[in-house]
Image (cartoon, rainbow, N blue to C red; front, side):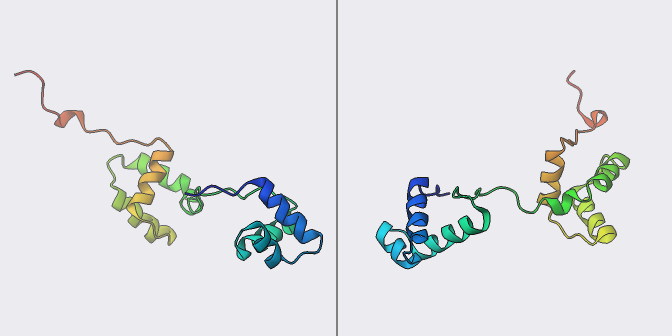
Length: 126
């Protein structure tokens, strides 16, 4: 992922636009894309901040987190439930379609692990 351009450059572009220069002219003068100058000025006028917005991160886990209690209760009831069964239950009961990988990340975030059944392990003695 790319890094944000320097705050100094951001400040110079915004200051130039605020002193009367057009965004297009300021972008050409400081060697940034016109769309970048437009976004920087818009962000500064809307928020008052010249700092870059955060990059990356989680944008969708709130969908499954809204059903946290139901999922954890389901796992508590049936400790051997599969990821596919959890995803199917969410779709049937709550109308939430999620992939098995989404369920896995949810369970991992909440430190829910599935251990193998000790009764099925082979004995170490020969």
